[in-house]
Amino acid sequence: MQGLEKKNISVVIFEPDIHRDTFLGFKVIKNFQAFETSVDLIVANRFDPLLADVSKKVFTRDIFQSD
Image 1 (cartoon, helix red, strand yellow):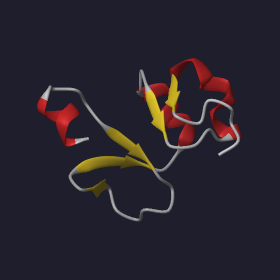
Image 2 (spheres, rainbow, N blue to C red):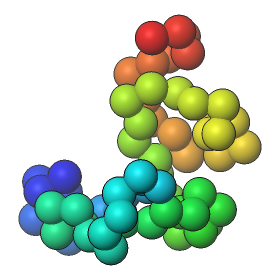
Image 3 (cartoon, rainbow, N blue to C red):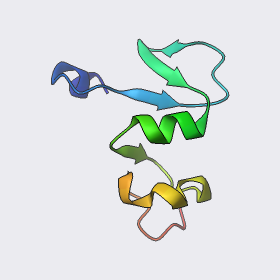
């Protein structure tokens, strides 16, 4: 994330369980609808059904949506 920031790419985090406005200096968004409309690309470790509506924005290593 720091590498992206060094290239002037804005990074935000979607995490409803973080109870702060920032994490490691990055803005935290707790509302998924607000998150999905404010980003161009979503990097996810795992594909979650919540991402189905924005799947064209999702980059994940979980290409088979199984692990």
